[in-house]
Image 1: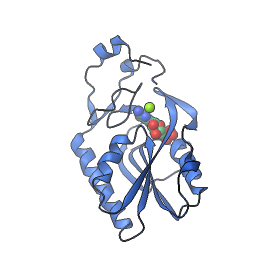
Image 2 (image 1 turned 180 degrees about the horizontal axis):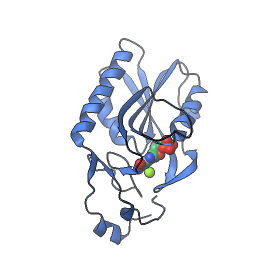
Image 3 (image 1 turned 135 degrees about the vertical axis):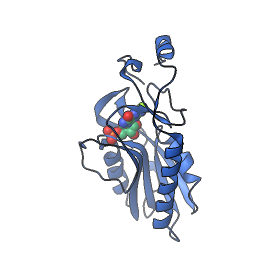
Image 4 (image 1 turned 90 degrees about the vertical axis):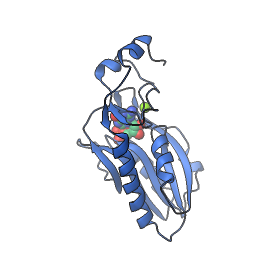
Length: 192
Ligand code: 5GP
Ligand code: MG
């Protein structure tokens, strides 16, 4: 759904929660840790969760020195700012060549834990040689399903965030920083 004109007027600028500089630093730290753990090994297969991890993926891979391949999957557990209890995996993970591969599952934000857990199970069922998980942002809140990612960029409060690939109603992904989306900017509508 297109944002209303009202939204554009009332939300011209969102204050930053995580700055561009902090994101850059932590993406560099994550890349260094991932490179250290995968030095001299098999090519890494990065499976990134679209569309939210789009910008994170683009920045991270340019900091990784080793051979790697990329696959994209789409999943969603939100409609707008409202949590959905179930994760929809929108691509057939079965079409990916996972067996025997060293896989890194990448998402932008960890919230309830459902998305990462569902995708981890889908990938595990396809027999990877190794599977690790990485999120740029982890919300400080109780998980609905227990999952501890192998790599975490930054912890953030339990608020709805946009920017750096994350959207509301497919808007705001282009912000170079992460911002909390004020309730007034969600207009209580389904954001997709
Ligand atoms: P979980 O399944 O852990 O509850 O949520 C992870 C997924 O929900 C992410 O892949 C992301 O698409 C979406 N999500 C979770 N929190 C936020 C948020 O604060 N902002 C946005 N834009 N998406 C979120
Ligand atoms: Mg979304």
